[in-house]
Image 1: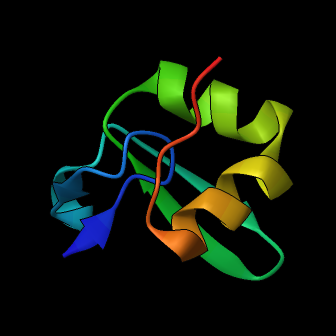
Image 2 (image 1 turned 90 degrees about the horizontal axis):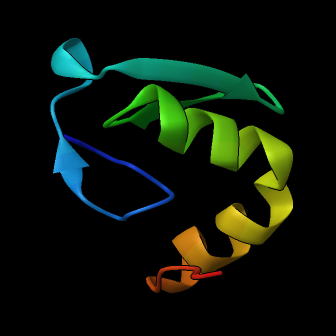
Length: 57
């Protein structure tokens, strides 16, 4: 299973609606909108993703 770094929901990578590569790692998303949000500020989401909380705003 993978985890969408924007909403922190678990999803099967084979069923992800979008994928982004960042610093040599693949990130999977539940929607194209989540991917766009991530790509606008990847470091903010990666920091939250690593600490297990979501970013709002």
